[in-house]
Amino acid sequence: MHCKNLFFLLLIFSINAFSFEEGFAKNKSIDIAYRDYGPKNATPILLVTGLGAQLTLWPDFLISDLQENNFRPIVFDNRDVGLSSRFSSKPSLALNYLKYFLFIPISSEYTIEDMASDGIAVLDHLKIDSAHILGMSMGGMISQVLVAQHPKRAKSFTMISSTASTPNPFNGPKFKVTQQLLKRSAAKDDIEGRIDQSIKLFELIGTPGKDYDTPQFRNNMTAYIERGGDDGGFLRQMAAIIGSKNRKELLKSINTPTLIIHGDIDPLINVKNAYSAKDLIQFSELEIISGMGHLLDEESYAKFQNQLISFLGR
Image 1 (tube, rainbow, N blue to C red):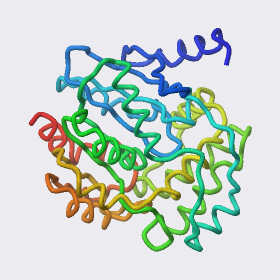
Image 2: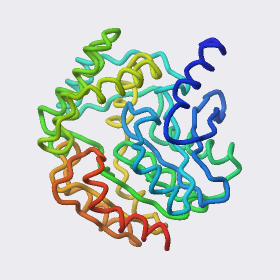
Image 3: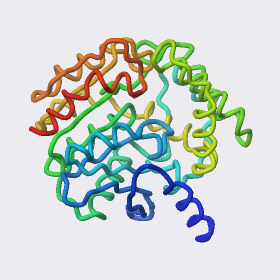
């Protein structure tokens, strides 16, 4: 991407309710795009996002609440998504789908461990010795590795809607959700088609009955797609998840104070994974949120907001 075009994109996405600094952290040859909402004198909290998600998906209500409670939110695009470095392999959708249901190992161009090192690169770039770590979904998996392998860099660990187990047909998403996830990369250059797919996916994994097909959602998704470009990294990130090893033993090594948050009706990652994580991480607390699916919306956040802020404040 030419510098002129990159500047134009950054300018567009700077027009919102928050001021922030953004740039790129270097992890060897990989560029990781980040956004630092500040303020610099507040306690840093690194937010690690989920499968195929850009940093702009973190909701304004969360960023605002963290800032109001004297925290410094820092977000970043995982490798292979958004403005971070992209990769080139083209995993076969049909072959990986078959391997998934036959429990055949899936190879990936990079690993969850590699993605955890990207988070460390962001902290290094910003000269932050330690931060609170909050990871959601795949971001929770990445954060498990980050916290376990770099305990001195983590003040605390919050894991939302995540798992230590490698997803498989018995403990993974419901069948309809898996189908929709695997369809996501089909509408490559069709923006309206990609938005329609996102709406269908959000309806499956979000809060039941919530209307996602709104003009505001479509406008936000259009800007989101224009910022991030193609969806090629989605399948490669999925391969990294499914190709990863079980992290249950890794969780036993975590001594960092941990808060586990999970929706009781999560159709993507079953709530039983939260109970399992609670048993594995010795200094952990568990909050099961009634009526919460896999997505973080304002209604669900209101149900655990006080617990999260209190936990981080300790």
